[in-house]
Structure formats: structure tokens, C-alpha cells
Length: 217
Image (tube, rainbow, N blue to C red; front, side, top):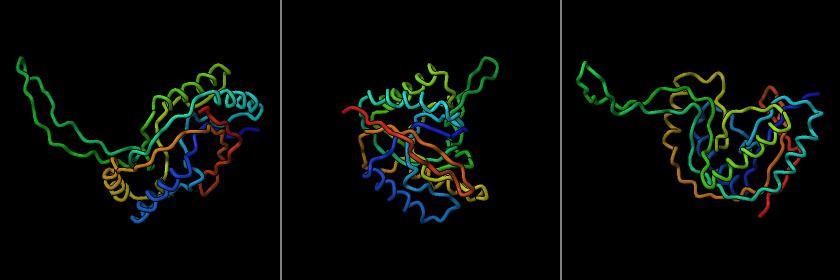
């Protein structure tokens, strides 16, 4: 039998309360967004995907080894979307024969259709990336398959519904861009690493904690 597993970091209770305030504020817009419940807020270290159940012992060993790592502090930085709204370059250069002219370009936002809304993370990102590198290296050594996408410091809080129209998606992107540097005065110490199971259901995925280890102080 196969399971969908991933390794991630839970938020502290105080951080969850702060995130809940941000989500409540964003919900006022009544967008077609499926807001993630509190129990799903986390920072993913690595997604294993569909994994054979007989590999559980090896994953358990890797999780236990992560407990030798040190605790570290992270903080909430602001809100963003994926894909995110980017600005076009302000200046460009064009060559005409032997003459190079510097041209001024109009600054103009690129219209994007965001798919999810997330909170940015700051703080000790070096320690966060080091922990992510460690678990990925251990999985590689054990010859276990996993998603090799780079680790992105973020906590997903909402997924835009498939039937959300283009105009509304553009509005969401523009509005969320204003919250990019939202001041969220919340830091917390990452104390635990969790092994999650993700079960797909019609209304969305459901997470269950299989096990966790505590990092050293």
C-alpha cells in the first residue's frame, strides 16, 4: 500500500493566532479562495509524494536523526501569491549599429493569475535551509524518491478555487501585492519536525501527523 507523505515544520500556537488574524482580514474580500484550516499551516521541508508503506522504517530513522539538529527562530514577513505580480524593468538598452542608447521604459505590472496565497518567512533562513538540505541528503543516501523543488520559506494559507475568473484572480494579485511587506510582529522558535500523511479528498487534502521529533535547544 502507498501513502502520500511529507516532512514539515509546524507553527507555534502564538504564530497560529497571528496567522489567523491575517486570514480573517483577507477573508473580508470574499474571494473564491479555499482558506486552509489552522491544522494545515506548516513549512514544508520536503515532499515525498506517493511512497510505499514498507519504506516507513527508513523514513522514521531519518526523522529521528533530524532530532540532533538545533532549534532556530523564524518570523512572518508579509503576504504573497504564487505566481506573484512582477514589475517590468524600468530601464533597457538597445544597440543601433555602433551607438548604444539608453531607453526609458514604462513601469508596468505584469498581469498574472495567482493560484495560491501564502505568508512569507524570514528570520534564520540559513538554519531552515540547512535542515532542509540535511533531510534531502539523507533521503538521497537512502535512495528514497522525493520532490527536488527548491525549499521555499513560506506557509500556504489559501488556494484559489478553479472556477475563480480571470478578473477576480487579477484583483487578488493586485490586492495581495499591497500586503507584501505587511508588518507581522511575530517570531517563533522552530522546536519540532513532523512527518505528515496527506490524504486527497474532494473538498481538499487532509493532513495527519504520523510522528514528530523535537530539536535540541
